[in-house]
Amino acid sequence: MRLPPLESRAVTAEQMAALDRATIQGRGVPSLALMERAGREAAKRIASWWRSDGAALYGTAPGAAGASRPAGAPARGKAGARKPAARRAPAGGNVLILCGRGNNGGDGFVAARYLKGLGFTVRAAVAAEEGSLSPDARTNADACARARIPITFLPDPRGWGPGSEVALAARNTAFLVDALLGTGSTGAPRGAIGAAIEMADGSGRPVASIDLPSGVDGSTGYAEEPSIRAALTVTLAVVKTGLMLEPGRSHAGRVETVDIGIPPDLVAEQPASLLMADAGWARSLLPRRPADAHKGSMGRVLLIGGSGGMMGAVAMASESVLRAGAGYAVAAVPRSCVDVLESRVPAVVKRGMPETPARALALDALDPILNEALHADVMLIGPGASRDPETAELVRALVERVECPILLDADGLNAFEGRPLRRLHAPLLVSPHYGEAARLTGRLIAEVARDPMGWARRFSAQSNAIVCLKSTPMLTAAPAEPLILNASGNPGMATAGAGDALSGVISGLLAQGMDPSEAAAVGCFVHGLAGDVAARRKGMRGMIATDIVEAIPAALVALEVGAIEGWEAR
View 1 (spheres, rainbow, N blue to C red):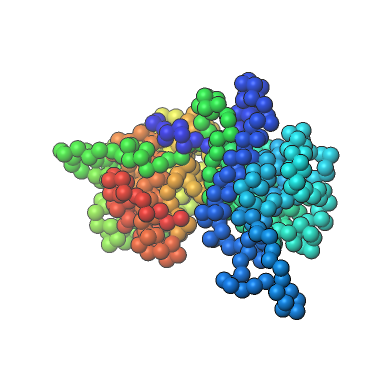
View 2 (cartoon, rainbow, N blue to C red; view 1 turned 90 degrees about the vertical axis):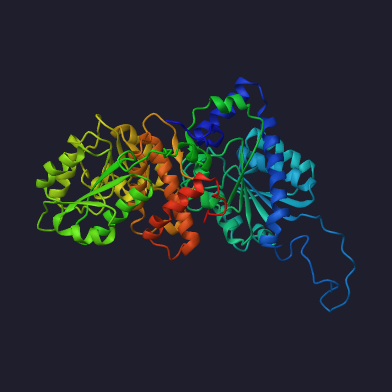
């Protein structure tokens, strides 16, 4: 598989810890030097953010340094008398730094010094005992004290309550800096840390986080309760995987990465855990259409699915196959449903098959489908197939006996609930949402949602399948390969039938001769880009799955000519 550029990599919390150790122990870089650079670079980015965007977006808090009066209005006392002119406030305004006891807190102390040097009025509040600071954090807290930056230690959660001095200070500050928890933190924040996060959330002021928002898992993106919702996250050295996955991505706000002195060769040696698919990479893998192309040479997809009341799913999937560029789409559906499909997608070839009394595919359809499969380049099983027990038995027989690549989606996946799914003799692709993923592995949906990367990686290894997990954003996992995170798509795609369009796009690309892993990842990108086009045309709130299907050709054109800027709808 040809992978996205390594520059797009993200690392887990464990990998970042290994990079820190290799830098400090293997290269002899003092930990204090890394902390100094981390805090300095974070402060510079935070100041730049506030002066370029933050102040305009969030304004200045009431009472904060730098708060302005109407032009020409004098300051007055209680009786309306003119007050003496006040000393000019620093250019940046008041900033409250929230620090923990560990090295992330130490980064915050360093940032406090540099923000003061950049014109901000700074104070720090520490959610820990003074004597509990890590050695490096202690060193930098002392440096703050020498720089006359006020530091308040608040180890009691009650010290962070709504009526507390620090809560009042937070409400009257320009913005807060979150340096409470670093990448090594796990579990829900409790005690003073949890109270500090709740205080920040209730302050109404924007937050800039150092490395990652406190309460967000640096590896999985899972957001504990409570957790910081940042406007800006300045992440250190390499972007963390938890900042790329929801809900961590939403909690992070704008993400900027700063160099803190980790040697580039150490980063390059770290195995890639997650890579981001981008337009240039996806464009380079799109199948070329030769001048002598004909429908037989552009690939044939055999779709197995449909049932009474569920023909829309197979209609959207089969149309998406053709709009993705495949030459043939042949749909094997229950005999009584052929006319319904004919009225929806005339370009698709229909094959009426034996059906159950519930108008689902019957086991007697096995032999005629196997005959059709002899001419297919790809088989897509599942859209609209229903959970009829006889149909499920048919699906399992097809997976066992068909020799061409198979993509299982929807009810094709449900046929393996409580049963092992593994295919060795030909490529197998699966595209589950969280509910289907949970049923495949006997887990709770919440367990899948807590660690989608881990689930996709484990299931791919166990089943020898290529997994397209419909997470936000979508993940593609192939055995022994880095995970690929999709960069396109938007919340408007949370609509019934969007998954049928995805399975059709992937199948259509695969039928044109793409490597199965590449077809899966590029298919996710094209599908998401079609959703972005549809959202621009229809709006995210009102778009439906057929809008995504209709936008596939425009998305492919935009991708091929390199003109996707402005289509993104997030």
